[in-house]
Image 1 (cartoon, rainbow, N blue to C red):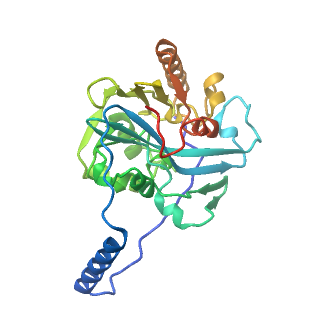
Image 2 (cartoon, rainbow, N blue to C red):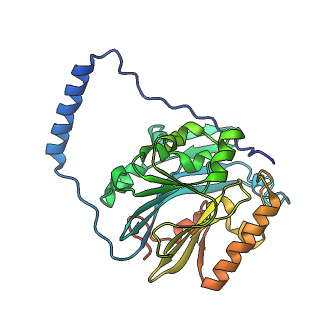
Image 3 (tube, rainbow, N blue to C red):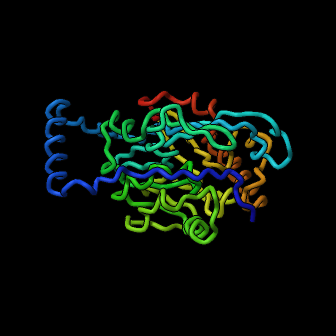
Length: 302
């Protein structure tokens, strides 16, 4: 197995308030919250839904000087690329699923983004602020699930400890026992205290076939994609990192850092067959054109 060459260590910590007396700090924060509440009024509650909706949220972008890492047959060598890093909200009459959590809201504190050896990362708008736009708070997220555990998909996961986490057993076992520079265990450590549903294969989130997690290993051992059946838009599959770019799907291109090439190709074939049989729409998670083609948040597919 080969490890991801994209190594970006990020260490962001909260300011230390320990010099302030605890009672004083609690009273000060409480007073401040009362003032803010009086100024902005009560929060708007989320609209109830009668059918499934799919929202695409902007959770960052990554610019790379050389995207050669996304094909082991050389087509991308020496070419630059800008990739999006969305989060996905699926609203269902029985609850709300958050699928992937982006680079992390803390990065938004770095105005202009963060440079690293291979390029640049940036978050312009926070996930939590976007949730507020549609009347949601972290407590409103019923389920959280991840396509896989690379850091650009887990950045905000710990904001949702009250959700039920639907996780691949194989993925968590790999993340815990095979240290990788692209996996930041701390970024999703809340799974150790959250209610979890550990799965081995496909999983029907709401029990009616409208929102299904699909097992698509290869990029990582427990990689997953998401299938959503919508009344008007039909079947939509969100790729995760089974495909990084649309041409990886068109030409079956495999990144050299995937843990298993054969599994990747088998997963590509599986998704292709499902798309053909359902006349479905593929959304390549990181592809900017696929993201731009979706309804601009807070609009949605339904």
